[in-house]
Image (cartoon, rainbow, N blue to C red; front, side, top):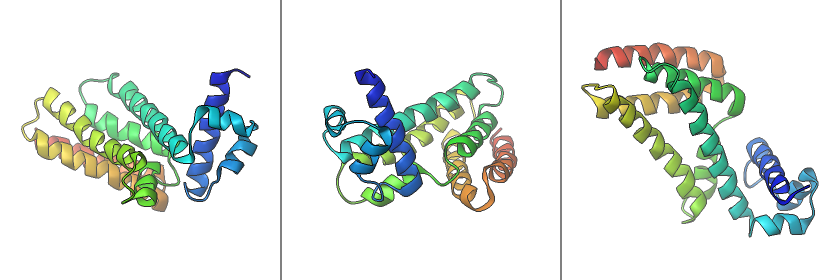
Length: 184
């Protein structure tokens, strides 16, 4: 296996384990075993568990934005509704047991580390994402709409664990249509 393949394997296994058991519930030994790599392979790629968590979050975030962007580009007339639908599909496929970024904020809060900064930064980027969409669409209340859409997606994420991604998304799309209509 090549250097980069092993690194990607470590990241994939670590993300799966962190998502399933939490950041604090998984040790490096378990990641090494499940990734089927040598201990030195892990340390050749990551200085510490925190460094591994940081990279897992960065990659997950990158996948999230790529996922969202791929849906938005397909229909410029209703980017807000498409963003909500795409977020719902992401929840169903990638985040059905809760939000990994919120878990990171909870687990690493107050420790003055890069992990919490990455997770909080992801949430801030969501707000900026909607501000840009609103400005591009010339919505009158772009600031308010961006905050409302961000809150809507965060609520959808939270409700997924209670009522499932499909139902949470269905409700959030209906709410998004009202918000967008109201902003016109």
